[in-house]
Every structure is written in C-alpha cells, then in structure tokens.
Image (tube, rainbow, N blue to C red; front, side, top):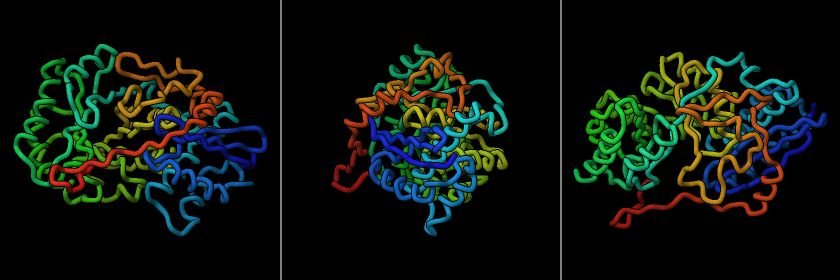
Length: 380
C-alpha cells in the first residue's frame, strides 16, 4: 500500500487532474489547481511528492500533517491547493481499496442529496432575468450572479442602481422562494460595499458572497453590520487558521476543497463553522473531481446547505464536467438537487482515455486583467 507514482493532466477548460498510484495497484484521483496558476501548482505537487514516495497511503492524517508542516513554510493558495489534490487522491484511493465511499469512512452521510445552484450572467453580468428563467426551466431552484463589473473605491449611484435592477428583474421574474445569491467577487471596496449591501436587502438574498476582500476582516465586519443579509466568504482562505478572524462574523463558510487543504481540512473548517452556528456552502467552480470531493464532504456535514457547481459556467470553453466522467448518470441533477455519489472513494469513475487525450491539448487559462477608465487596475 506504499505510494509509488503520480501523474498530472492539465485539461481544458482550466483544470489540473492528479492520479496517485500505490504498489498494490490501487489509485486515486485529485484536482489540485489554482485557476490561472495550474503550472505553478503542478510544480508544487511534484515537490511534495518527495515526502509521499514510499509512504503508506492509508495514513492520510499523518501525510497531511507532514505535507502541511514539513516544509517549515506553510499555507497560501499554491501549497494548500497542491496538498488539497493529494489529499483528495489519497481518500479516493483508500475508498477504492476498501470498497467504501469517502463519506462512509468519515462516519456516514447525514443527507441523501444537496441543493445546487447555477451561475448566471458572466463576469460582467447581463440579461440575468432571462438567464435565471432558463436555469429554472432546467430544474434549478437557485442561482448566483456577480453583483457588478468594475467598481471604483467610490463610484456612482448609477452603478449601484444597475446592480439593484439586475437582481430586481430576477426577483420579479421568478417565484419568491427561488434562491438568489449575489457575489461581490472582492471587486467591491468598503465604501461601496456598505451601500450596495443595504440597497440589495429588500430582495431577501440567500447570501452576499465576498462583499469585500477577505484580507480586510474589519471591513467585512462593517458590511455585516450594515445588512441583515447573510454574509458568505472563504474561497480565498486556505486553512482553519485563515478562517479564525471570521469566526462569529460571517454566516456562510465557503472553503474550496481544491484550495483549502482537501477533504481533510475542509471538513475541519465546516466543523469550525458549525461550532459558531454558521452554515457551509463549499466553493466549487471547478471540475468533476473537485465537485465529487465537495459532495463527499457535504454528505457528512450537518451545516452544509447548498453546493456550487460549474456545469455550463461561462469559464467552460473547450471542456465540461461530464466530458471526463464515465458514470455521469451518478451525478444527475434533479429538481434543484444532486444525489450524493455512493460508489467507492469519490464515487465517480474518471474517463482516463479522455483525460489523457485532453491533456495533450492542455490549456493556458488566465483570468482577465481589468482596468478602470482612468487606466488604474480594477479587481476582477
């Protein structure tokens, strides 16, 4: 059961897949990636593998501790995403070896399915009401959209009105119980975030996501005081220690199972949220392995309430989730929910032939660089 080798596959549209193998023939899949930094994370995985080679693949917690603490410097998006993909692959391998799903190994599931939402509107949100209607026709019961495009530190009332009008159009077009989440995406700064959050309050949103950048916890606190709408945050936090400044401050924790140290650490973060009576809604605009890993955590997390997924998202040019999965029928979306996969490990069977072929094409995805009309840098 000793770890022997690894392979990495950079596949379209913007994903990095890891296959980890052991000397008993067992293997597992993971998705270690930072969007736009796939090559950097791949290099980190290769370095971390030196700590893994020849080690017992069953000792997941000890391996996690070694990979996290053993290099002296720790944390951050690159190292934690590399660790995340390795951790996913180790859990998948163990589950396959013992014929058990990951959630069974973690104590069993507390739910059979979980609500999902779909992205609408693109980076610069447009025609959101029509997009929401189309998602509703496909069976979704909730959507998420960006609040706005570029926004200055202090911007015009017209920009706020445009954002409010887009949300209002969805609320008017669909039934009151239809869920709407609005992502400020860290592109709104404190002076405007308070105003925008207050103006959106009448629409009874599921949550406002990343109202300001998570590097400004004091500003998050100020926005939270300005609205009764639940505040969600966490995609740019990479460990339970990163979440500590937000305990008791945010309402929805959003760790990403491919950024925040994998299944092992994400589950701990969710338990931390539960201790502060907060919900969990895992961040996942990524590929099928990340989604499957998220669902395994959702299965055994009492405070998880909804799951992000990227089927049909505007980033997916040249590849889709199910292009790389053989048992796509086990990830069927129905009436706004997805069933928890019950097969061994992650519960999905990867199409290795398709992955290897796509890996030959690769990708060079980078997020756009935006500027304000005066030439200064704008947050994407």
